[in-house]
Image (cartoon, rainbow, N blue to C red; front, side, top):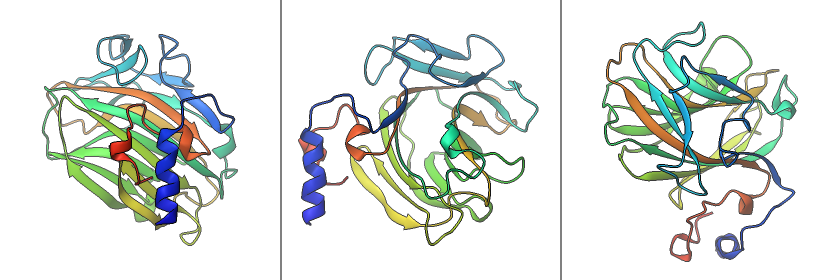
Length: 250
């Protein structure tokens, strides 16, 4: 109880720059230059624009059409990549991170009984499932963690036309007794700290955000991302729209 009250108080802190913030990919540069790399088939698939934003002035509009294949891999995709060198090549073993971002699924977003990944933490190896990924299956959003022993640790109904605020707390480790994940969705803790392996042994991990989906899906998919932040302190990744009404769960 004491911890809950202490953490809820963090929601009342003013927004300020902090040494705990390791990186921002919030598009407030007006482009995607904050990110390490872009994987897209056309300039209109990943657009930084001011039309639908969660915070600030800009957000990323993502579009995927059937056949979009910018890299030689399965599925269709258009994604941005962020590489944190401190988490590459096994150097991230034992590192702890907070990640936050917001995602809005367009009102036209297709309902398909197959996977549609909208955020993933990909391993540096070539085979196997990502250590952590957020995806849509039918009418559900899901969080899947664990790599070769992956399991869904969270599910929630897919809602279109509204912003979803995510905060993920991760300890990166190939040891299931050391690594853990926790998830907060729209100001509510939905996954408590849960022990599990979050890395493949000896491998690194990097972020990919956009949309990556099964190549069998025919309808166009459109969604929006905003505010991606990486930090080592919870107070620096709280949603910009958080209020005292949603306090007490971080």
